[in-house]
Length: 173
Image 1 (cartoon, one colour):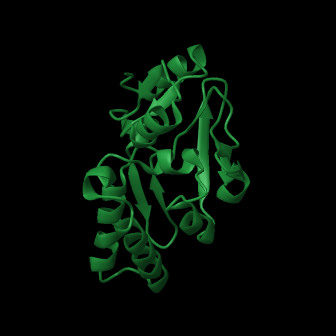
Image 2 (cartoon, helix red, strand yellow):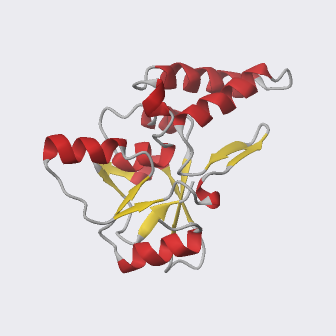
Image 3 (cartoon, rainbow, N blue to C red):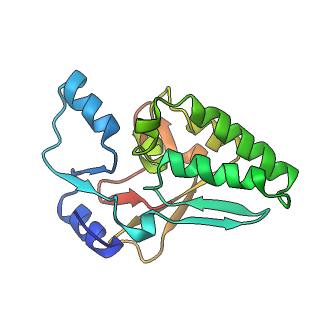
């Protein structure tokens, strides 16, 4: 369990086939129903850089990959309650709140993350269609990168359960 981004990137480089986990919701399903095994799991729950929420009004919202869906919902509820929010921000907030509400149970939303939801690349993903509709970008990093790589979400998804992520890379935000 690394406690900073540098430690995480070092571990991911040493164990490129490791599984990144926070809430472990999808890994539990893979273990139980698909009989897949992940002997090395790396928890990113406590990494500050992956838990950021940065809002630049009328420009963007950046969610770190380990931000839970409950925190995302709360962020968008705050935007709706802000009288200075733009109509575009309000529409986006309403769309995310509406979608997240249907995402499993409160207990699951409290531990599952936006990064896990994206990297899972499930054809029944709850957030991917919204992220594609708003033309979101994904920030990818690795110990081998001098700078983070920013990729449009439409170029990130390759196929069902397949994304443009190398074994030593992680989604940062």
